Length: 325
Image 1 (cartoon, rainbow, N blue to C red):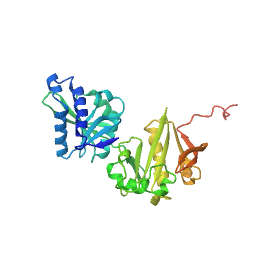
Image 2: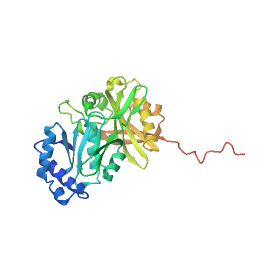
Image 3: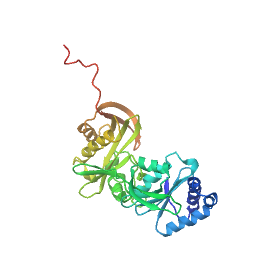
Image 4: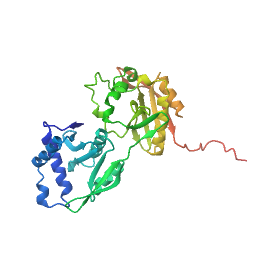
């Protein structure tokens, strides 16, 4: 869970910031300077950030694990406790920060920070060429996030942003027609809708109208294993029967095959949902299997029908060779 930092949890965020800062700077700072970065000192630093209108977030998972700040499009102060590194917390924080930033997310790192450079590059950031000279003799290098964006004739598929909350609520989480067949927790009101769980995810994309840029649906992939995955999709009932889902799924399949390296993509639908079945068939997916009473949803056990598509399937070795004499 990623939560905003305020006066109630400032010291927790400062403790994380202080411990991680000391660990990351010991290699090139004097021991006296490194150890001077106490929890109290970093609390004062974070308070100044809050006073300057930065937004600070704390990742909590059975205790505080990491922290990050965002000011406009600038991501700063991304730190994870030393003993909690390598568990994906840094990636979650960075994805979340990018989702709540305005404009193109950017950040700065010290030029000798090879670990951060590898992380940011793997997550789609690139060096802009801008550099800052620091008093310590090490330059800071700017990175910016290359937008992950797919386009079709009428649609855009890209990352969920904080500004999508109202459209996500109206078209997915509060649309009972959609939730009859698309598995999602119902949201009663916009004020109580917890949108934070959908931010910063690298498996979830918005489906937008190119004409307006507004979110009308979502598409995602999950259960990724050895080059295979499953996809799901939902679109607001006000936008049904216009071919949008088929258009989005076709583009998303190309992304999964060509950019994510998948070789098999599956999808399933609740038995009786013929509209979803037709989408799969129009996108080249073939019947795979039927699973009776596999999933409980809305108080009843549901049957699922699975379809799949394979990228460049191997020729059937048992098929007769037409060129054989």
